Figure 1 (cartoon, rainbow, N blue to C red):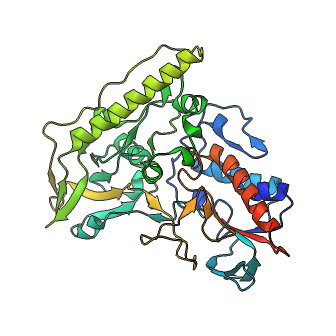
Figure 2 (tube, rainbow, N blue to C red):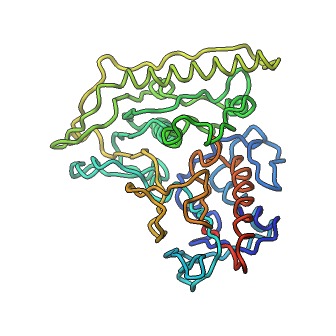
Length: 404
């Protein structure tokens, strides 16, 4: 966003509560890699030109990339500057209160992201004594986890990666499976994201969705940035010894109770995968795309019959529960009437109902790829156009504060 604002000669400052790329340095597990291949790492004025285009960056490499990108573009970043409140100001703009002073701004871009706080179900509070609890944001490596079995709650990208790492270190793992988006890492000899980008799936716009709320709340893709390009799905994990259970519904008297819908949830994910691959094959045929390999289909997800409906967490079999149940933004510092009764910021493709207040970096903000690095540039460019038009209506523009 800063790069796009600078290109339009819009005076601005970027306020960062920690260091640049702080969350990538402090809130990721040690072995984490991007879900997108390196060739897909594109930003305004930058494209990957390294020696490993099909590889996947580590969290540390991503943090270094963001730091260098900011420096190369001359982004006016003020680090260690925490924003405590954004309020409406008398001049029609905003008052931005920080721990380093107060800023006046005609526009504010909320760039603090969608992953500020772990989203953990209330059943966590009913865990019995002796069972440790970690969120995916707190997990770092298997050595951090107490000896004994681990219940991983959540089958999306974080859950399957953490479960895979624990299994490779000899841990007993049970995965509580809810709704998920199953994808192969590679399809017909190419990365699945190559197909989804080339076929236009990732460019689907927010204003074309029949159910935008649903689209913005779909679980993250069940992918992993594996060094060897292997597919980490539930079948791969059960082949290594993991056990599957349904969605965790409650914990009563130390016993975890699971939904009986495991087979249906997995069958739905399998069906959606089938439909996606059918559409990609159809697109390839219609556009004369010659893929390196012929079409293929993947085995259905194998689930236990009957599925387990309960697990005694007092028995000592499970020593740790890891909640890979997603994250949510923290917008408590926005003291403006821009949220609904559930605390969600209302916006139309990143443009809020409060003139001059913008949002970027959220799921399906303007396109399906909004949460990917490659999607940030298009979103930023379009929001900058809108922001510039807003500033043009003001008599004496001040500056823009981008909280990142």
